Length: 447
Ligand SMILES: [Mn+2]
Image 1: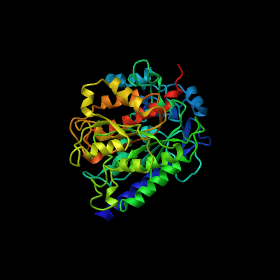
Image 2: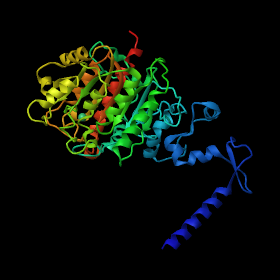
Image 3: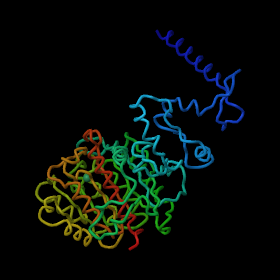
Image 4: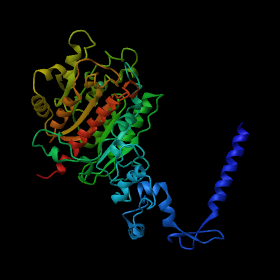
């Protein structure tokens, strides 16, 4: 059977080779005639008129640029064959026959790119950020594929590429809903704002050893911070990290701290994540104490955070330790909180002004755990909790943070394996990044 197939394919190839060599181009390739061996030249336009493709679609080779377009322009538009008698077929041919087609630019810049190309976040250019040590970029998007410090569902190591898949309809255009009415955000297209946004791919992180993996992530973040900015040359590039379980934020904060000093954190999450390691994991082993529920405790302990300028939004998971120990410890770590159901009582404008008042004018880091969104909208996450924010509430609050000095951000705990077939979690996660890009580029809009 296989031998037969091989014989068949060999025969087919031989036939194609012979058939191909049967037609020999005349001396000049741009000539409109071919010469059949030992025969008279053939008029290509006559051949084209007989071609089904040409009759239906006209000249597909027309090009707007360069010499080819001059050749195309000089050639008369191919019409349905004058002797064609089938009226239905003549009708099918009529559109392209009667309407000359304008093709986009030859270099594809104006073409629709939603499902083509190698996937990067919102079609931003892919950069070799770790092979080169001195690139220019204003905002670097980077993945942290890590999920070996979770307490419930694993799978966030696939988050970065899930978020990229969810971002394929982003990357172009002004949004009519971005920001509060009258905001500069409503005039903004972050991807064409003059800021250079690149996708650096993912930082390598071993799944076998958390200590090594977090060291890899730290070195990756540090490498990105050491590149140069184009618009604000005095600052390092801003980083947006795609998680990954929430532990990854600790290394992002460490690298940010080394460049900016202590930062304020706006933490969107249904969980506190300041848990005392004695309460969560550390009662098993010291190393287990550093995980996705304790990283903010360590960020505070290591001095990365401003003392009293951090805030949680969307909290709703129950405390773990008896009584109010977790809440007291959270306060000691420098956090205030707006719990999920506060949003039923106070307006989003009040939420935004409370956040702004809390964090002040200094460098701000935004960390968004996708589980802050209600699990009806964002099921693809590691530790789902009921009664969360709508995606609209989250995006409205984020856009409301316009004017803060956002130096870095992340979106974490996205688990594509638990998402729906409709990719709803990853699409929301991508939109969160889009909003953060808005905050980072809005100063490009003039009044
Ligand atoms: Mn979290």
